[in-house]
Length: 88
Image 1 (spheres, rainbow, N blue to C red):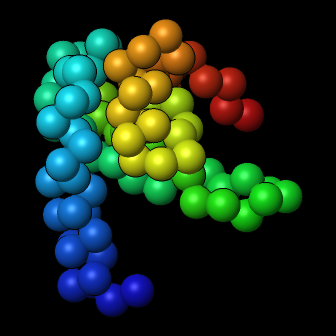
Image 2 (cartoon, one colour; image 1 turned 135 degrees about the vertical axis):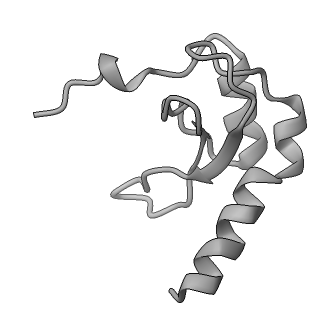
Image 3 (cartoon, rainbow, N blue to C red; image 1 turned 90 degrees about the horizontal axis):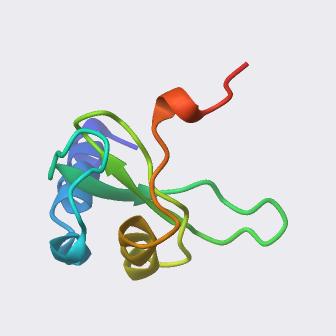
């Protein structure tokens, strides 16, 4: 990917219309959120989506669509702060 395509992709991630329904980050209160591609399922090979907070870098739960990622961010399967992850 070229740098200009990366910038275009980031612009789309932060201006996604689905984000209008997203709640602010529960950890830092930031409303600077992006919808980014999540981890792919290893066996199914489908695209997944997550909300990323630019303020504290927490990520929301994985959704099968951008709208589902927003719903999960707002619902009971809330975001996880990076300090709660077990990184080796």
